[in-house]
Length: 335
Image (cartoon, rainbow, N blue to C red; front, side):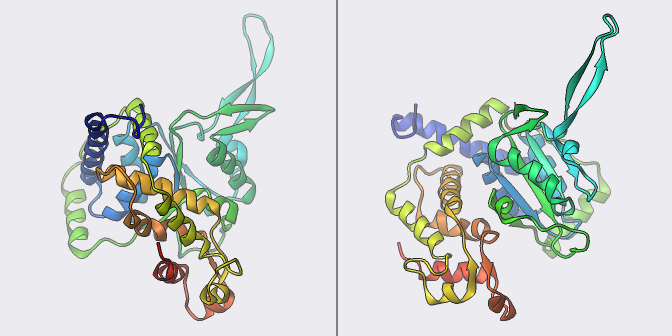
C-alpha cells in the first residue's frame, strides 16, 4: 500500500511510526554525542534515503563516534576502515585464497569478503588512499555490488557509506574525483561544539562510562521506512523549483545569470536535482508531513550542492565560495 492510496488513518500511522523512530534515534545518539544537532539530522536523512554522505571536519569532533552510534541505534553491521596511501582495492573488496580440503586433498580458490561487505561503512580519511582504491569503493556506492575475480557480489541492504575528510591537512592526500563526490548525498561540515556543549562533553566523558546505545530499528523496520520515503508525494511545482535551482548553478546554460557565468566553472548535475527531492521527501516524513514543501528544498540546498559546484579561479581569488554561490542562486530562483 502506497502513501498515495493509503487511507488517512493508515497513512497517519505510517508517518507517526517514522517520526517516533526519528525522535528515538536522536535520543540515543545524544547519549554519546553532545550537540551537533544539524549534523545528526543530516546523517539521519542519509540513513532514511539509504544515501552516502561525506563528513568534513578537523580531528577530534566525534565523527567516528557519530557514525558508530548511528549504526548501533539502527542495528546495522558497522565497519570502520582507515584509508592509507598503501591500501589496495583487495583490502576493501576481499581476495581469493587457495584452500585445501584435508579429506580429499583437493585445492580450490575461495573468495574471502573484505570490510566493504557490511551495512554501514565508515571510510575514514577517504582522500588518503589512491584513486585506484577510491574507484573500487565507487562501484559499491553506485551499484550496491562489487566485482572480484570475474564474479559479481551483491551487497546486503541497507548499504551506505559515511566518509570523512580532514579539510586542513592536504599533504599526502588524493582529492576525490568529481564523479565520486557526486555520489555523496550531503557534504556535512562538522564544526567545533559551542562552549557550554564542550563543557558538558568533557564532564560526561571524564566522569562516567559511556552509556549503552539501545537499538531503535530492526533492519526490516528501517527498510520499510526507507521505502516509505520514496512514496511521499511531491508536486510538480516543487520539482520544477528544485530543477531550476540546480540548473541555476550551471554556467553558460539557457537562462543562466551573469553571476553564474562569471563565477562558476561547472555546476551540479541531474543527480543533485534527484537528491533535493529525495532528501526533501525524507525531511517531510521525519517532520510528520505528507508532502514536500519549498522550505525542505531550500534547507537542504547547501549540503547537497556545496560539493557539486566548482567556482572559477577568479571567483576563488576574490573569496567567492561555493556556499556564497548557493546563497545567491537561492536568492534569485523563483518558484
